[in-house]
Amino acid sequence: MNSNFSDLSRYVYGTTRLGDESILFSDRLAIAREAISAGLWIHTSHQYGDALNVLKALFAEDPAKIPPTIFKLGYGSPEEVRGQVNHQLEAVGTTHMSVGQIFPSGLLAEDLCNGGPGIAGLEKLKEEGLVGRFEMEVWPWSSDIALRCIQGGHADHLIEAYTFYFNPLQRFVTNEVWDLLLERNIPIVAMRTVAGGNVLHTLAKPDAPAYLRERAAAIAPIFKESGVESWTEFAARFVFSFPSVRATVGSTARPANLQEFISATTNPQPLDPEVIREILALQRTWSTEHDAHAEPWSM
Image (cartoon, rainbow, N blue to C red; front, side, top):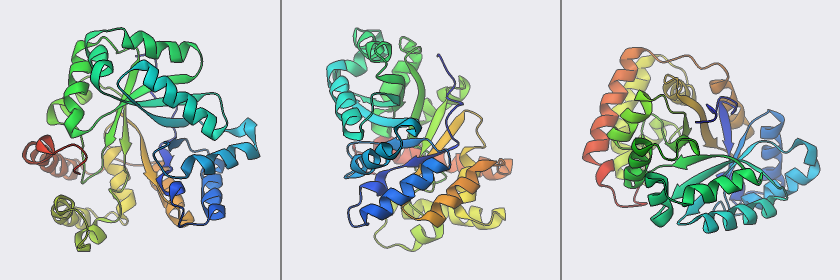
């Protein structure tokens, strides 16, 4: 691998909320401006509603200060990835993305696992200066691709980090992938910092997914007994208890929440080892009993 992803801001500002057109455009622009002023990296996608339009307006304000940005990409061929790279760069009015977060499928996934020509196709995007580097997006239902990719080693020089939902309630890779990532100290970018909100609120939300409410019921007592004041701090300290985690990505449209994210990730101290052991034991069980059998996009 060419880098260790240590240059990312510890908190990466996720832009899903920037795509919510029920929020005033000016308010979305303001929170994004605040995130950039704080020196944060940005994570975005053309799948996030109106988010790219907000970023385009913001980047146009000062083209010399466009922040490092991670863009989601896919899927089955280098040509398809190139199309998404060009589309998204044009949409935000810039010529380079710092990181391409690739979710491979089909022939491209096989090439990454087996050393096929798709690797050279993605390398060309780097050579042309369109993409700085790549990380792979992983889900429980795509963990076999990540596992074979890591085991094969053919794309180690290309895929420099792995990214997935990782917080106290969610660890969206199989146990086999998780163990291999830790064993080889491969950089991880943790998605969904607070699992959608305070664990105590999730526990009380009747419309929350059943699996998430069940996990909240198991984690809430651990959180309460930890003595950590806020859920955001607890969640941040959990993921940063693992040295290979380089950053956590979370979204908000509220300035107070943004400051809480920044504060919680500025100098996060590891949680008590016993707390970590309890959560990891739960996550191994959840992965075996539920996540590994989940239908795509069902959770």
